[in-house]
Length: 323
Image (tube, rainbow, N blue to C red):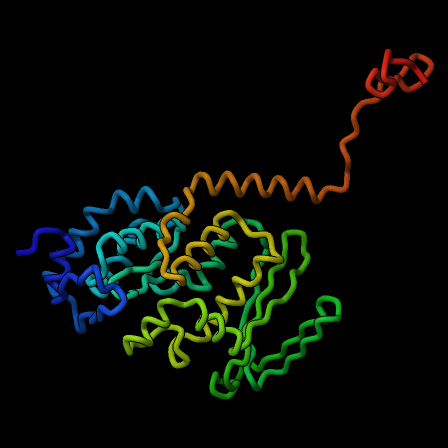
């Protein structure tokens, strides 16, 4: 008999509670076909139980209804995950104000763990939301595009790209590399970052625990060449912008959570409190404004009736005098 809400979800999806001592070998078989009434009831019970936590974590700009709809759609597929990891992954997603619909973010299954995975579009959303950049530019350069990279040239001559919008993806050929740059609120352009397929594969093979686990278990993964490898290449390029581009506290925290998930570590500790993140972002904007100003604050100069500057005790080592 199923006692807990997650037990009901597992029972409705035909799954079984995985053994905690074997997190890296558990095979997760998501249900196929249309959801059954039992699955719908179990999902709704889960949302009812954790709805207040999601609502408290989401920023005002994100609809609770949209977030819950995305959770309802993915919950049967992740029912084999440990309940604590699923709740933490969803709360982390909510605290960043991203919807786990596969567009801005997704929930990845790593054995019996649920892991929050932001997409490159999720990063871009937070970059715009921070107000620290005027625009984010990114894309893929294909083998039949016309392009030129000259790092020694001044912007914008260091990177030139011409594409044929009338060509189909097949006619443009395979994506060779991803590029990304931003324009600041002052109109300046950042350095252009490039990530080719070899570099992206290196990052994947070295850092992606989920990819290694999927290969070990014989499962498909979004980092596969025939899946969303190009999206992974774009995301790698976006993340490599941050050392040379001002990033908000929220974006920095997102990257930390993302990296923790890639390593197989706990992510929730990296999720920022929304109010604290907003205060930090405001402080950063004020600091950049002060640094960008070329005007120095001039303190009033005390003078005598004859117009001479009054020098204080600290300047003379004794009584103040007029010079």
